[in-house]
Image 1 (cartoon, helix red, strand yellow):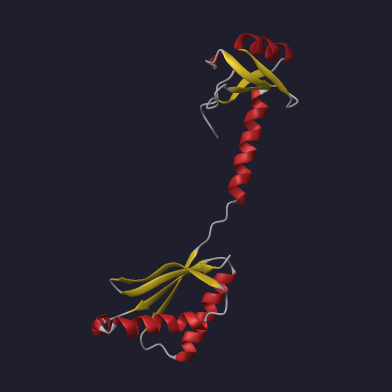
Image 2 (image 1 turned 120 degrees about the horizontal axis):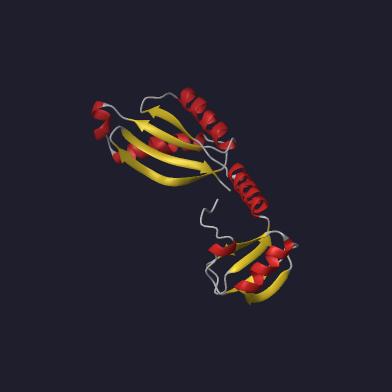
Length: 170
């Protein structure tokens, strides 16, 4: 929630665009007139937007305003989708059956909406093998994945081998 919300006498602007309690636009008026309207209604004058050319203020109860803002923030937080990154590790000598199992797991992860990092783990001399051969090994597992996907990052070399990241195609 925005902690810099100004209410009543904290508002610095001399002219405001005022919105009534019912959400109706009351037009542009002087600050003094707007504060008097708010006091007559037994509510507060709350500055909603200070960035506009003419700041926007609303006549409403400050407690209700805070409640609605917290409610908005909470609903935005719950609707945000957090995707997890799952990792699948493959070695050069991984057999066809094991590759099929790992690609099924990757498909399952993608279906659930997770990102998948595929690591081709290289040890010892395998790190110095032909890069084309190593890329072909990575492509081999990608061909077995049944779910539609897109590459987030291309195959890149790391200290322990090659890796790439994929996610479900939109």
